[in-house]
Image 1 (tube, rainbow, N blue to C red):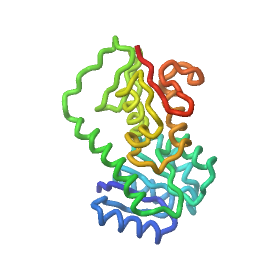
Image 2 (cartoon, rainbow, N blue to C red):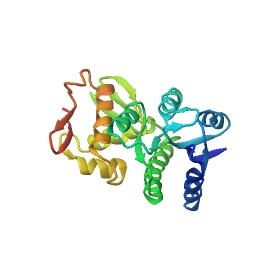
Image 3 (cartoon, rainbow, N blue to C red):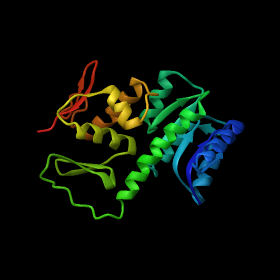
Length: 231
């Protein structure tokens, strides 16, 4: 069976309440209470997005995320009572697309989920259309249907949030894109901090730059934002 959202959280009452709230807004949602039940669920069902707690009774959400990333590219949003910057940075660096602290606002969490689901739907609409082969003579180009970048002839696949971020920079290439504009266009709201953006920029540089510490393409404009420099 197909679901829009899977909640993995051993706080079952909270998970149930969240699932019921999402269902009211036509987001088909299921919840499980352990790491083991998460993987069992995915054997017979599929989901567009996962909300993942860190402190699970039978393991760590961080470990679950790492294992999921071996096989899935779907958005993973951490939901946790752990509020330290270190936890957030770990969650984002191992493959999480966002980090939401508890107690969370149901309406805000729903907004974040819907932003991700909308982006997934936009990508799916492109699937099935004839995809024009990229010009590999171009130094840098994007392929929406596969969420990938053609860089100097190499095809580099990205996760959904990484692709949305590089696409925003690409659409404004050779001009400064402010942090506020990136938050608005990529995440769809202002409920994120610089740490989230910095981690995603770092992950993009690790995939796209020969030397991430001395980037050729994605440049920081200190105190303002970023610029994608292309010839």
